[in-house]
Image (cartoon, rainbow, N blue to C red; front, side, top):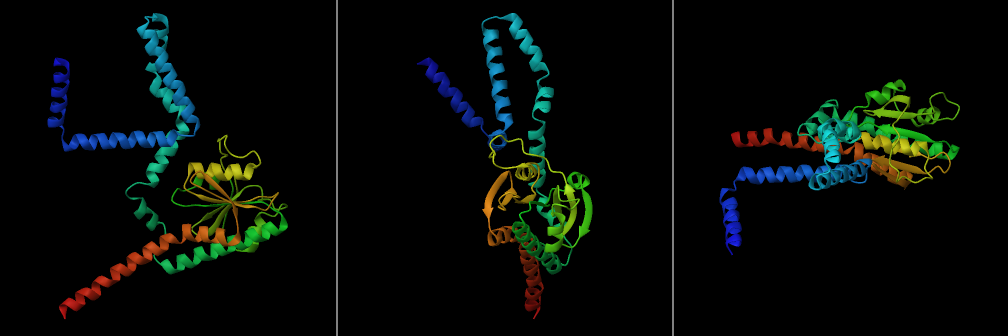
Length: 296
């Protein structure tokens, strides 16, 4: 009975001393743990974490059973655990930092600053790029030729562009078809589209290391999925064997796109930023008229 009373007193003491900062601390820690689990789930890091947990369990059992040699060896291993974790989880840590940078507080304002002041001209440029991409892909489908087109978003792809040849040309269906023509020198690689322009061709993309991708998919699809895993880019793939159109974004590869569904997806992705900006401009234009009405 005294034991239960003591537990109750300790619990009441914790409740009485609990403050707003403690609640904030719990929420932040829960958020970090949740995102860490979400980050490593269904990746190679999940298996590595299981291995580390097994080592911890073995170390605890060795310490409890007084297996001094085993516990000492594992203790020395854990002393260098931080360095080992950084080495083992380097891809996952990099991806987490990239996601944090993309979702940061100032990301919205940084993304708006990447476009010119003339919103209508930018929107027309992106619309021309979307139409040229769709028409070029249809032509490549007809000719049974593959394609790999990367649309750069907030994450800059300078290292990817550096692996290819800079073109910086206005997009057209003919140019896209010519780049991926199987006799062209730049056909074996990816095209990177930056701010509505065909910026580079013949670029080399990182391949996905996921073992859950279908064995029927070739290097282009693996490169598209790999690019979507390490950046926020959108990648369009045309299969050389089947002519099937696929779309990769945020580590997800969607297949069986048609002309209309691909165009709608690209417009939703690339033109939505201009609708938000235009709405903000229209809202700001209302304030002067309200002020003039008050003065009258």
